[in-house]
Each structure stands twice: as C-alpha cells, then as structure tokens.
Amino acid sequence: MSTDRKKKGRDLIAIKEYSLRREGARQLSPSFRVREFACKGSDVVLLDEELVVLLQCIREHFGKPVHITSGYRTAAHNAAVGGSKSSQHLLGRAADFYVEGVDVGTVAAYAETLLPARGGIGRYPKDAAHPQRRTGWVHIDTRANKSRWSM
Image 1 (cartoon, helix red, strand yellow):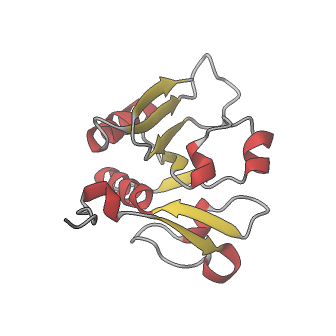
Image 2: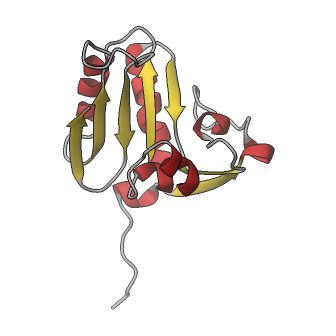
C-alpha cells in the first residue's frame, strides 16, 4: 500500500517565500503585489497563497481598493506592535486590511462567507470606543481552526 496521500483543497496551497528586494513588484493576483505584504526592515516576505486568493475575492466582491496595513511580520516587528506570540502574521498567513469606503462589519461579514468553518476573522472598528484609530480594519488569516473576535 502506498504511503502517498491524495492532496486536496487546502493542502495544495502553500506558503511561499519572496525577496522584497528582488520580487517586491511581482504580481501575485490581479490586485496585489509582494511588496504589499512586506514587513518593515525585512527582505523576506512569507505569504500563504490562499491569503492572496481570499483578499482578491474581497477586492472583486466590493469592487473597491483593499489596503493592506499589515501582512507578514518578523518576530521583532510583531513584538514591537504588540502582536500575539502565536500570531498568524509570523507565518505569512494573515493580513490586516480595510476596504476603501466599506464598514468593517460589512467586510468581516463577507469574509465569513469565504471562511465559514475555519480561519481567523477579527474586527477592529473605528468607533466611539476607539477614537484614536485612523481607520477601522479587518484581520483575516488562514489558520486551520475557526477563531472570531472584535477589539
């Protein structure tokens, strides 16, 4: 009996490593380039291909620009911004972003249709409780389990 397992669905998508210096302008999808996921101070950019697909779906659904405010993070940068020690950003599996002119709740609700049983979706609204935020944003990640939160 063969020990090979059939690859299906999520197993076919992988985390890729890019060089910001050499591949920053590389087009990953119709709307996104490697440099948009880069971490300040790092040439390495780790990126889950599925994350790009999800963000492209969001871009096409709303028909408006998607601005990535945080993609891949080095451990040092993650610590500096107060990220979780087990952050999916460290693995290239997460992005924080906002869709121009679309409410955080609306974006998160659509993301839920893309990841109904797994993945992380966080809501970070700009509201009365968070007046210092320049904009609200949504966190999305490709983790295997399901996690939802609002901050």
